[in-house]
Image (cartoon, rainbow, N blue to C red; front, top):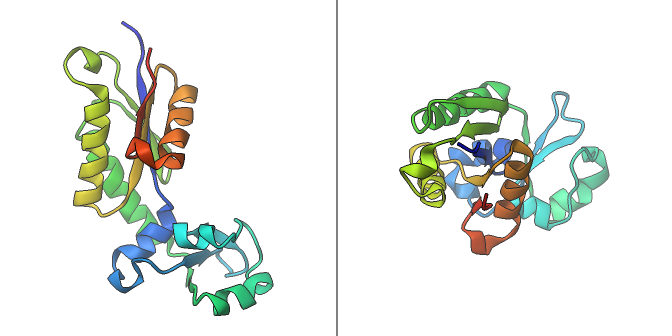
Length: 170
């Protein structure tokens, strides 16, 4: 039996958490700042599209923030930890082995599941369930190694035609 892994990675996690309870910010660019509000630690897709880089000191981009009406948040690690816990518990409902990789990423061991289900369909179901139950967007990369699952996840994020799920063949 060949190993198969999925990497489930939340999209723009801190920014997505901030938007979750603020529907008025749905298409608004937002930034999340470091503990001391000095640097950008997270960006929504809209802020990324404006060319704002990770780690940039916020004082250097004040003009861009005002020009584009970017909403700025202080980090709320209690909120992020709570939502991360919800995501991870939901992932654990799908498979017996989940390895939490970071606050917004987890590897799932899918070994043997390809004999009973389509892994692409499972990935799509996981993505839809996390979105519906928690309200956080995720992408899923599936492959025979964790490194390739990470690569597949990158492709799932980068190429909209994938629908956010990529299954690399064995």
